[in-house]
Length: 146
Image (cartoon, rainbow, N blue to C red; front, side, top):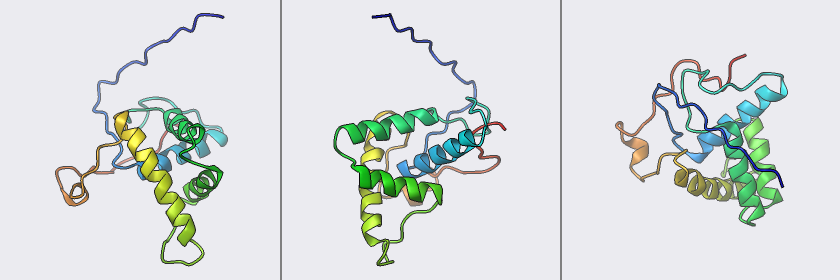
């Protein structure tokens, strides 16, 4: 077996901004994947907002939850579809109610993993309305340089 070589990623001198939620991280990942499919190259530290991970880290977290049996195929179908259309399922819609439950289960499981890896800020019940904890999303939010 060959020895695996690990090369540390260079650290940015700019401020790293963790995601506010697993939902925000998931939508960012889907936008990055869409850009990759369209031919863009994802380059670390290229955008105005520096993230604490690569898009592949989000994918790996979801796949680990899948392998562990926490997420099932139906969860993956729901988060994939709603990630592509860039919205969450509406629990008030009778057709989307069951999908909203699957979405919430998947995002709760992903939230725990991403918080443990310091990719997502820990959520407090009042953090959503606390101006000191809110993250300002301004400027160019593209995940990669095109």
